[in-house]
Length: 246
Ligand code: IPE
Ligand code: IPE
Ligand code: MG
Image (cartoon, rainbow, N blue to C red; front, side, top):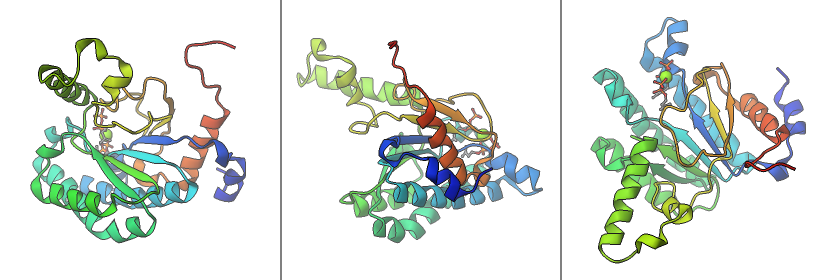
């Protein structure tokens, strides 16, 4: 693989994807391959989160959405779930200062009210502390599912119709988008999945309708700046089509 400096020369910084979304997969396999327990894989994954956030912030990406915990991930053994929640809390507590120093604004999508309260409290604190920042939006998908995003959006919209705030004939794609967790954010232009799986795993189903997809066999704890640059270079070389033809 080329070095970061060489790759950087190939990136057109004036045409960066505004919104990059990442399915951070492969922590467990990374750990297994090294003879470690799965939690060690998640711990190593957090290191890469810090690295990638810093890099996106330096590059000038507007939004980075990271799939950190899905609505399906509760099915995992309780110890693993608890370890992930504890790592999340520690990450938020330790990183808040650096996030603030880099003007990163932390947001989150998902059924947040169902998150364990210690993690939720830390999350809410960090979101409040960074809410005025104008740099990278770091958007964490937590207890997130694309289907529950849509269902919750429908419920809120239906409630607004019931209370007279909206009329049935007002509903269109643009209006409905405003009822999703991602309201106000541009749709992801680049969707990255690590560890080689060719599936979406219930991530941002509505929002990725025209995202460019880039899958790498690299496990998340090995994913770094050079891989992100490779993804962006590949994205920039593609002809983006939206169903039309030139
Ligand atoms: C991704 O890594 C992290 C989360 C889903 C929380 P995995 O834990 O899914 O790792 P693999 O897919 O088993 O290797
Ligand atoms: C997707 O990874 C969810 C996150 C990265 C948080 P999973 O490991 O849960 O997805 P599947 O089971 O491979 O589809
Ligand atoms: Mg996985």
